[in-house]
View 1 (cartoon, rainbow over the protein chains, first blue to last red):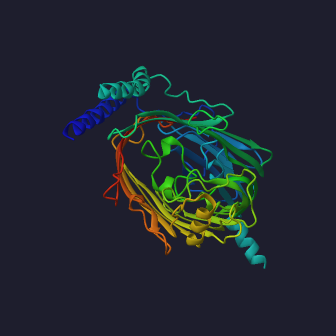
View 2 (spheres, rainbow over the protein chains, first blue to last red):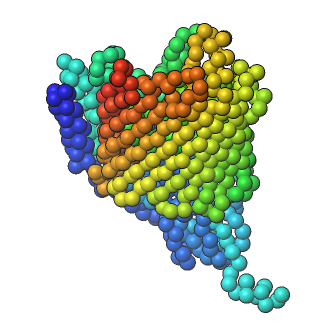
Length: 147
Length: 377
């Protein structure tokens, strides 16, 4: 039993040592820089992607808003596709490899579904969410006043 | 000598990771083709020498998807287990684990039909090697919840308010003639192969995902498992509650699963008359586990090292009908301790030590040293 424990200790130490060696040589993660100019956002939302969930998975903005969505992954590569006009589709790099940015112009009220566009596992098709675009406060006030 | 061999195997498994880390190559070159998949290879060495060590290419899985339109999607998963499939021999398995169409209507209501994963517990729908600790899946997710549990069916799914996700399916029922004393429902799924559906099973799952880092789930299954022995009534059920928690370097998981077989005594009698062997199927089976893990490296690194400890308790003879005696060797618990080393978020090396015990004074549980490598692409 003592010999067995000793062997296990050696094996576990080997794993940790090799891990430490590997980590010592790892360069720090870099953040992707976007070279193309983007419109100045009215609002920035950070979305975290992980198997099989976006957090948050529901975003509400007023019409006329330029929404910048900053996407990072907690695990593997994912994709972020907003279904509908414009067909925004960006690749989200895996953990430690930076972030992706998607810009959404909320021009029309409605619900816009988004989904993971890169197969990420057995539950890939559950990974989705929705952007709700509501009428602006002035429009709501105007429609309320006309009733 | 054996220690040397194990060490050599360990070094061989680790060497690609060290080499990649030292060269710094591949830091930003993740690519994928039209097919995704995952694979895992295991080395299992029984410590008590009751069986020879095994080196097994356990799973080779390919996933494909297709979008017919924005509202109609296909998803498929094809798996080869144990590397080799031969006719008329005990060996590997070739399985269509998923092949379904999604018809997307609204976030709250979508339709699905085809070959589906039963939405039971943590692992059945989430079993890529980098996503769980330990070389082998938890015993509870193997013996009590028969992962990978899949069958033909149809149903609805959706997300309510961004906080609550659900699935509700009708699926082909289990076949009670395959229930066993040792492994419960493990071999009882019809797996979509000309499945008999005199009556369908109903299954569902709800997940609460409103709090970042915390996911709570509850699942159920209910169906009449009288398939081969169709003159019997064998209503079968299972309930599962589970939780996953992540905060900083800490991770935790817990799962409880409880299965019910109504008419187990009649089932045992019928199988005995048919085969001459009483399968000693229990009226209830039950299992649970707790798992804690700690990440030793900062989470923004490509590399990661996590250590874990898991306690499991699983009993496939939990409650017996009159006339059948509980077999104590199947009232088991297990301690599993080990580490996962992710040399990339999609490539993981695993090592663990597993000690299974039982209530039997005669038949000891096995102790196993396990090594594994798994990857996702």
